[in-house]
Length: 216
Image 1 (tube, helix red, strand yellow):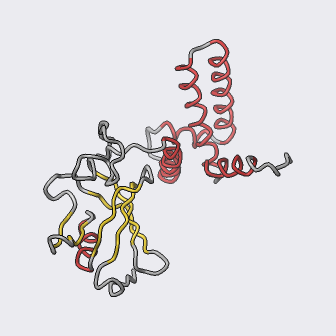
Image 2 (cartoon, helix red, strand yellow):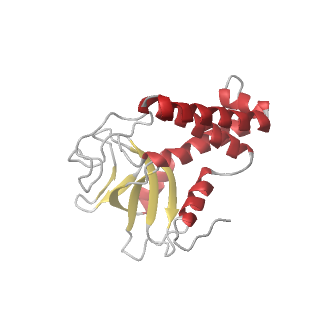
Image 3 (tube, helix red, strand yellow):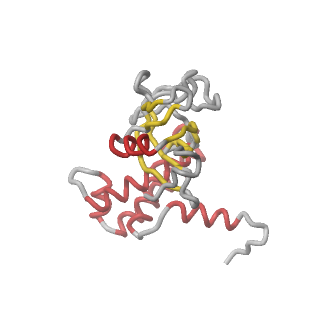
């Protein structure tokens, strides 16, 4: 990656973003040494302008920023680093350096306590389902659906949709959410088998939201 460290006297800003929630967590600065350490260790490392030294985020608190990927901007002088944060990011105890989410919830499986829009999980879920489709691990329910074929996958979507309707009419809100989740999962499996993404449906709905949209 070609990074222009000379423009700001050897430093470049690094925007830190939660890879799952897309929430911006903090802004720090890196010199080339800090960047190299970040790449080598997989843990975000900065240059401290106040202490004039290298420091790895979390080296004293344990609240590391585990790197998912790094992107350079169009001018090659600003980094966007997507991470899985371990615990709160700010030294004040908040999840971001802008004081958001002051009450820290329980950490997720990846160690992050950062809450975001749950809808973003649908993309992560399809990523996981696509991985199942590629590897086809034995003992996986998702694998069994792919092995059963297109007709069975489509049938399951229909069955779950019917159960959703029944719960909507005669059931509880809790059961309606449960059955709707089943339907959505099976729909994503079906779409994956067709090489389609859930984001394409979101794009279609966004198009329909335009007042000039006309039904086909």
